[in-house]
Length: 286
Ligand SMILES: [Zn+2]
Image (cartoon, rainbow, N blue to C red; front, side):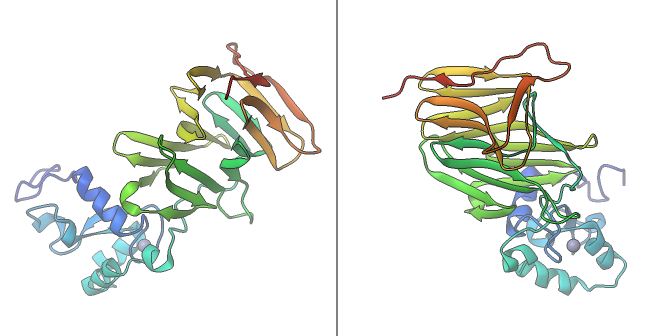
């Protein structure tokens, strides 16, 4: 028996489709306690005796709950019961999927920095993406988003970290401070990294609404509308207060930075020399 296979020659690595099935049936949290960061565990038989990665004999369990099983505190029957009625499915949400800490102070989208901004995208009056500060000191950042496909159908929504939508249409992984949300195996709708330097980075984004598409890839934010494609890069937008909005599209006009009564500062981000902005640009519509 080597490190990478068991005595039956079964590799330790679990096929992605098995992982996805386990994650989805669990509602994206530990079947027993609902924590959003969990592992794919062979229950019975255990991995050392398993001949296949059979999702029927495996469960999505967090390290703590799995430890209780392997140390014999909990019976395997308890795991089967939890697998049949997973915590997140029973409770309708995965409460720690976005528990990414409460000490971050800035948000990076592509290579643009937002400070004191709660709402990121507002398109024709609809808030598409928001990241609100924690409600309590130890609480998680609260992410809300509306994810439409290119045909204008709502695929799924996140409302203050609560997922709503058909489970077969999306997939989420949450590992080591990296949250990845996919609408299909090839398309990442949102990828957020929690950095040690007190910031959150939106590394990937693909949002579509009312003919407007916002994308982040390779560190660049782009805006697409009616065949126009513009890059937004390298600046810093800050507001004096909360409740600011970073990018506003309203009937063909793109604006950057709105904060009600509070002032907005828009300028180059330190260390960036390639600045491009499209603020107050009118795009043809009709
Ligand atoms: Zn657990």
